[in-house]
Image (tube, rainbow, N blue to C red; front, side, top):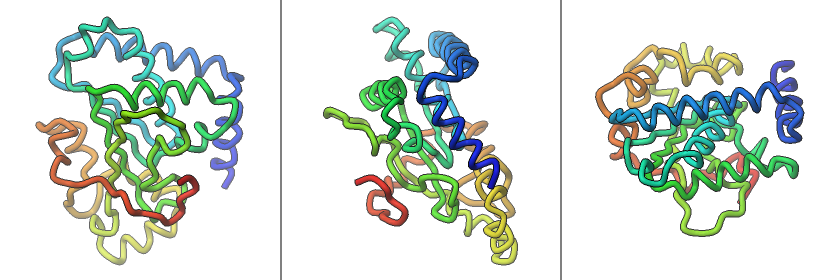
Length: 215
């Protein structure tokens, strides 16, 4: 798939700092995120999908590093990553700055991080810890790993069709589903509960080995 190959090439250039416009975009998002964190909201929720998880992770990490120490305990800070590609970047030797960002989030006590990955989605590292390719010193705060269980959100006929379209399946995280279920992107991002509360009853997936490249 051409879009997948382009993503590989972009990620390799990003790791080497060859995309100044991207670095500037991260700085802009980080500055905006910092303003939100200091504004007194009950929750600040950042969402990253696919390779957009790189942007969400780096923006939040930079915002946290720039904040006054006393402000770190202010709002509930939530990070939602969907269909992530994190090891595709973090495993590259030149991507030290991104690994530094992961280090920041791994030790940020106030950040509630939940990652959703569907095993049927061949365009992501499903149920693989985004920190898996990084050598971290304890204590580490790992993200909660969950599956959206797309098969339960569609009739068997519709799900069969969805699985045949890899592109469509990869973007299902941010679209409406046919049936009601635990995973509902619009309820998550616009509902009354914060991210941690909404999924507090679900344990993190810790024993999924299929497709695992690290560990």
